[in-house]
Image (cartoon, rainbow, N blue to C red; front, side, top):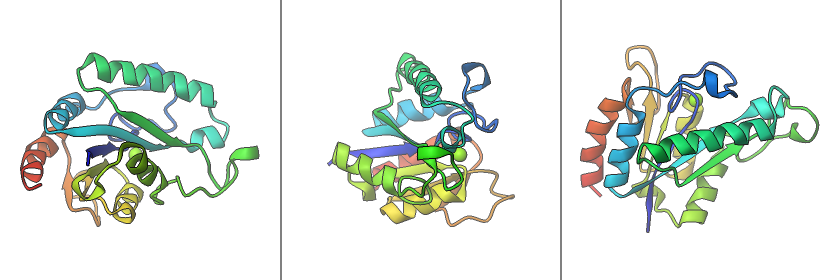
Length: 182
Ligand SMILES: [Mg+2]
C-alpha cells in the first residue's frame, strides 16, 4: 500500500494571509519544497487537503481557487516536489446558496483524508499530516493517521498533535526517523 504526506495549505504551504485567493498573496513558507522532496525520496505521495470556505462564503469563486491551485501545483512540479492531488472543501454552515451546509469533508471531519485514502489505496497508519490548526490534528486523528504534526511555535500552543514544530526543516529531520520505523 502507498503512504502519504498530507499537507494543510494555508499556514503550512503558504503563510496564512486570510482567505488567500491570488498568486500575489501566496507566499511559500521556507523549507516546504525541501520537505516535500525529502518525503518523495522516502516514498510518500504528497497530498494537500484544505478547507476553502472562502468559496462558500462568496469571497472568491471556485474558478479563482482552481486557477491558483493549478499555479501552486506547477510551482511544486518545477521544484521537483510534485503534488499527487489537492482536495478542498468549499462548504461552510454559514456559506451562501448551495455552499451553505455541513460537510464531512470539512476538517475537523476526516472526509478529504478518507477519500484520498480510497483514491490512492493509502495505508493511513503509515501516513502523516501536517497542519497549523487543531482542526487539522483532529481530522488526522479521526482518519487514523500514523502521525499528526502541528506546525506552530511549541511554546505557544497546546495541542493533541504527536509533535509540534515551528520550521519545516525541523519536520524534515524528524521525518527521516519516523519513516525508518515503518
Ligand atoms: Mg491552515
